[in-house]
Image (cartoon, helix red, strand yellow):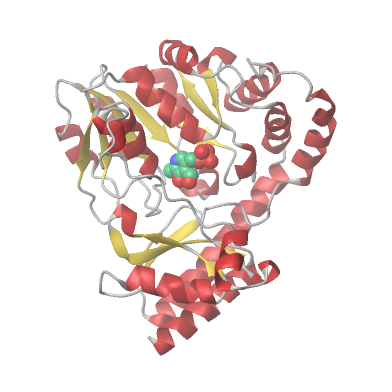
Length: 370
Ligand SMILES: Cc1ncc(COP(=O)(O)O)c(C=O)c1O
């Protein structure tokens, strides 16, 4: 029986597939949770910074009250760090929340939103969720084709999502190319530049997107505390944009979308430069180790600037799922990406050295017996 509840464009949405939790894999495969390695959700393998844990413990006594709806202190800390006024900042319950709010704030049902093939799944969800029309621009070498994205703009386009680095492919667009793109995007079209992994970029690849926000009134830069800052479970993200866009976001944002503990932890994490540096260094080291192992195994991978790598584990469309199951049996959780149209690939989050070794050993064993 087909349901008649809800709009047809909502019924058409394929639900988001999250990384499997450790407890679920333990139950399903009869494994001990302590021996399971999870490299499936691009989390920081160092966990939360100690500074954030201390800040949360202090804030815990405030939990009988609602959070500060304007997050005065967190916005002040972000304002100081990024050199923009507080009223250019919007907080989100994770940056997913920002992406979703932006789509609803800038686009009407029936208008179009542009994003790249193989880009972050939430762009499609946000587009479909409001009954907008998706214009999906074919990727080039698994990354964004900015010229084609510009050429795809139509009269009813109101938003372009750009992820840099991109998830799940890890591809990176150099600053000057992005700047040239922003210069050409019509001012009636908002650009959400999703920089969830920006803190992992090496110094030579960095560019100043906050300076672009000052220059382009249609640009929104989205960042998160979930990755390099180590606070994925707390759900804090933020947007930086000029007041016209920020004001729209704030009209739609739920007033208490970032809770008290999350606000306190985010301030601490923002100021914990040592943790951030350690996270980036560990990631770079893990990337070298994983890609060296892929080279040795003769596996193709997409060069990545995120905290994960996309690796091709076979040449048939069942390969991703097949290898994934074998890895799960050995207690290693990675992410199959068939739902992204990449059924021959797996996305592996870069872990602690011992986690990377466990994954490599399990992969070698799987491929040797395949
Ligand atoms: C490109 C990109 N943007 C946004 C997010 C959302 O992260 P969060 O909602 O935890 O901030 C992710 C998470 O995987 C991502 O990969």
